Length: 203
Length: 410
Image 1: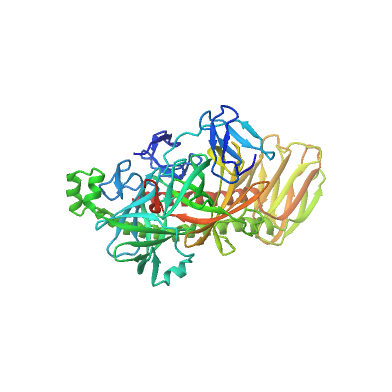
Image 2: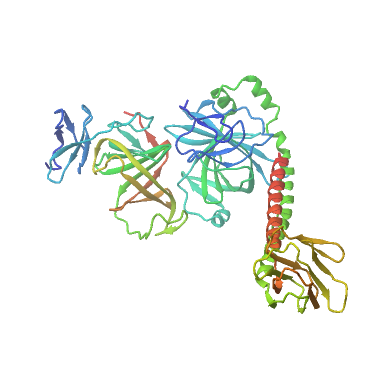
């Protein structure tokens, strides 16, 4: 299998899976709800699947939305629980085929792209809110547990994965998210989005 | 309308219906007034219920549309400007919508405002913000308007941050021709809020507020009773020096207790076995700060029931202290203790002035050799315990006084 292919057949039910992302790693079959992951040899594997409960959301899977004048396609989402609530990381693709992550947490929206940013943090667990790093201020630190996903994703996730992050505020709405686990560190750069600039019903 | 969950107040078991989302931090129990941390369902503040919240027409749990979005009122925080001569007060109602998150409806005598967190300001320190003449936001110029300090006077319902009555916030206001930007400085951070004025009539209709309530509000009754806030400030200011004094006394007593213990030289005067005949032992006391400890026992653990002992000033024939019939007392009759029946060792603590003394043991008939040990500069553990209890009592009193003060404020 290669990433140029834009559809696959579900190995469980044979349903056609249309793929939009360039770097597919996981996809959920809409027909039988199987979780299908793509291994390094390009083979499809079926793994245990969890159906996410419907929750009110401005963003709907496979329904275009706009931020200001740019159109985005929500291809997938991961839901993380922090105990009493949850937030969702939406994998979205813009009109010009750029891939983004839209973080949605009870009306707070952050649109980011993965970007390698050189930030040295010895122990993110010990870092304090208000600390200045590379001209950014540590604004929030948190953790969530993956409770499931929908659609297609350019990365592997599994239920129970712990997602730890720092939000670094750069002023003027700029934000860096520093995600860390035992195995890897990923950095994302982007902006806070005003809900008033999101349009979901348009033609 | 948002869906709700119910939690049980850990203090009074009252069911509390929560209307907010997962980012709500606290809920205030209507029944007992305690503030519950929703992360662990534990009480974090007790009895923070204000007696006289201002009367406003909006109630927690009611829903209405603002800017085409249906919000539910889930919490309320009232503020009063500190040191204001006109007792300016207002209410901020926390709004929640599952899709659009949290916002605030600001209610005062003169206006209604819709306010939402604004995250696109430059990074500012509080000093920077105070020196700004204007802000550029959403392509508009916001001129510096005012800065002030306000205190939380009432909380109710659910809030997405941990608040308590008495918390102080600094505000800096910037205004454009129509909108405002408000910077708030709390203990931990600076937050910016963008706010827009609302038409009262429209919002009252949206929230189904009856015409009676409108009339009530029209009489400008809202926040009239917050004039009590001035008294509240004074009482809290008065309480502080007294609490500081109590704290100083506690520290002083603890220090004294430690000093008594640490500085005690425990100087050995004499330690000897006497023979069975009448025995006299001269000794000198060199310092008066501590007690003199006299240990009496017999070499074969014979009990002290019939023991007698006298202490004389070396130049006097009448004893200043006697031990007889198991009772020890000074010459003025003041008893200092009693030996337990059957005891085989006694420790006698005497407060002796500097000088020369004679210890006298009348001859005994039990054929036992008495052992005498005299040590000066001893601090009794009983005294130390006493000195720890006093500060504890004082500390308890200060807590009670502070609690009463808090109740009297309302």
